Length: 46
Image 1 (cartoon, rainbow, N blue to C red):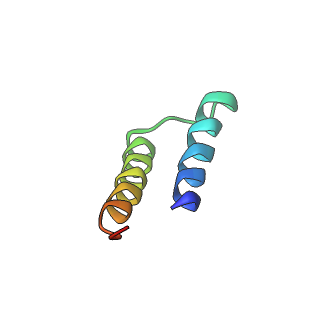
Image 2: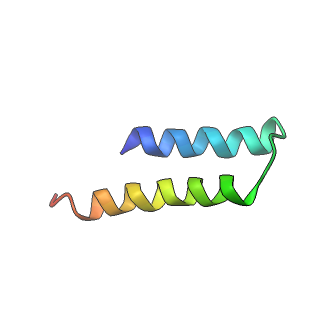
């Protein structure tokens, strides 16, 4: 779970701080990663 959050954070940080290109595909996949993390946490049974 924390790896997914870190990866999404690094991608967003790169777009904000280092002015990496912000494309629709990049936003989609970062959002997909966050949805996957939430989904895995919700279905983990803990």
